[in-house]
Every structure is written in C-alpha cells, then in structure tokens.
Length: 229
Image 1: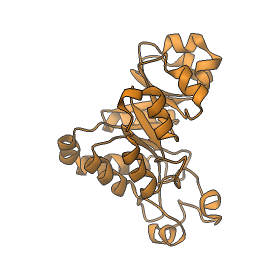
Image 2: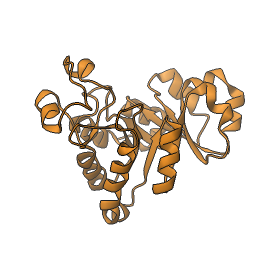
Image 3: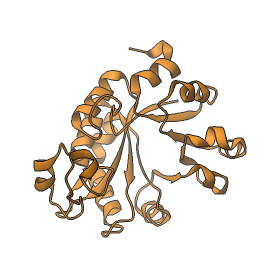
Image 4: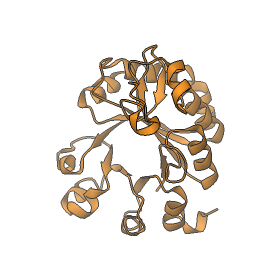
C-alpha cells in the first residue's frame, strides 16, 4: 500500500502548489498525484479546473491563457517543476490528463515528451510515473506511446473493467459494490479521495490498495502507524 498526496498535501495547503507538494514530502507521502492541462502557449500546468474561478476568483480559462498570465494571477505549478520535485525527493507520480479539452490529444503527447526528456533522471531516482485519464480515447492514445498507463473509472463502471492490470477508482466503490471490489481484487488498485478516518479504517482491510488522499498525515498514521513520522 502506498499513499499518494492528492494535488499535494491539499488538506492543509493550497492545492496543486509547490508548497503543498513540499509539505507532502515532509508528511511522508510515497508519491504525488496531479491533474494536467495545456496553456495557450502549450505549457503543461498542474491544475484541476478549467478556469481560475474556484482557486483565484478569476474567470480566466487555463486553455486560453499563457503560462505567464496564469502565474501572474495564481500560484501555478508546471508539470516540469513538479517532475523535478518528484525526482529530487524520490516520490512516485500519478499524472491525470483532463478531458474534454479543445487541444484533444495534445496534452498526452506533451506529457509523454516531457517524461521522455527526463527518462534518465527518472530511472536514476527509481520512481514510478503513471499517466492516467477518465477519457477512453486518451487511454487509447497513451497506450501507443507510453508504457505505464492507468484507466480512471467511476465506481459504477468498475464491473466493466476488463483486462486492465491497474485501475484508479472512487472510494465509494468500497461501500457500494462488494462485487466490483472482488472483480478488482486481482488488479493493482488506486483509490481516491480517502480523507475521513472511517474511510481510512475501512480501507485498511484491503492491504493491496494504494490510497490517494488530501490528508497525508492522517492517512499515514492510520494505514502505516509503524512508519509514521
């Protein structure tokens, strides 16, 4: 079982920021999780939403803004910067490409190109990097150009996961479908977003499940008490 910091240590620090990821390292996370989008000048940024509205109360669209414009308005981290941090701190990384977007498959190409450019550093750090998406078209594209791909599915679709060796699923799967959990038993499972103590206690019975959480310290204290810092 590994613990991945969802957009960094986002329970206590601004999500997706360098501070949130640095604090996740201090808290003992095994890896990071991020969402990625392309800016108007084709830079990859770690940002979940389509616009800055929720984070910075600005209407600016990520896709229609340059990296400089976004950095002037909010604390924006590029994937290049996060990748360097993951390599330096030796943390695994889950990268989710967001869809639908106007640039379509360009985000997957850009992400894989960046990973290829730092392949030697990634190998030397000994970290695992998985690229994932809800989009079946994105998964199809990724499987042609990158070896470590993971499908993200809503809990109600988990029964229809066929030959995928690894899959990311919503935590609601645990309480809503024991049958789906049995179907996924032979697979490598990543589950999001597990923050509540009751959910963490429930997930303890599934020792092979990897946890994606906002609450890094709480997850580590509950799931890996002997390794707590």
